[in-house]
Length: 354
Image 1 (spheres, rainbow, N blue to C red):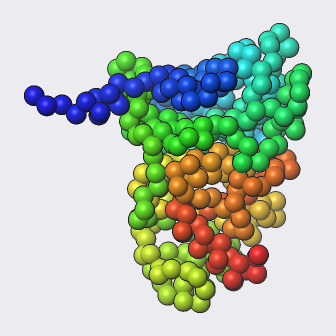
Image 2 (cartoon, one colour):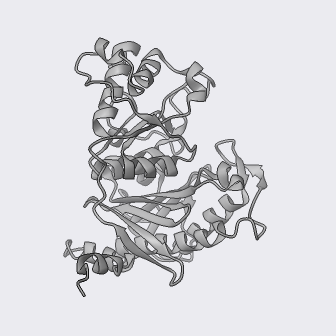
């Protein structure tokens, strides 16, 4: 009986094997990055084991505190944050860490060796959705340190996305998937819970050439600029493109919005489309957008670019932004390259932003 040997081989490729195969393309690689990525996969398994039991164990609800962003801390937020730290702090692979949940840097404990990489992470993106059983995720970024030796510093963390050596996310939904890139394409792995391992399920992921969806919280329309308002109507199939030179025919997309960045981005990566969270005029302390450059925008921008997409703050490439602070916020337009470039044209045309 004939079998699809290629498909069989793909489904038998574990994430560990895949990462090792990727490493073989770089003869001078030390193996530290390979091990670091596998440690992240292990963290994803542990966090996934709690998300699937969220209604059965005492992991739901608020912790009773707020984080540096002023957001309520969920119990699963704390578990995810501590799990990643404890798996990474002693390995000798990292110089420093930073988390969306902590105000400052997370140093490597003095009793452990210092490595050459920097890990930035959002332990549980979309955590406000936990209690209503909506998909959430972990986002991570990896840089090489830029300082010569000793404990990692703020300089090591404040690097533009263009200098990322790896980025990815784990999405905890109807299945658990890990998606990552080291600058050599984007690859997705699905967790087989029966054997406790991630297997390659989505090799060489690419943004579909024909977008289907746009994702945005239209409840905030009253706070948007004229350019963003007209761009949204353009996506819906309106005639606003006629007044913006160089913009193609309006696509007429369907709206899909989950409210969990990882989930919205993941859907558009698979089905095609654009996610955007523009700057709004609602709060004086958020004039530059809500999403965090280092923990959310830059890693997903790296993934999008490797998959043939593009990410912008409305003016230019997210990957070229030089971070000025650890928790810097930015507007974000991410997904199909043509749609993101059209957003830049609308913002420039109607909002006077060059």
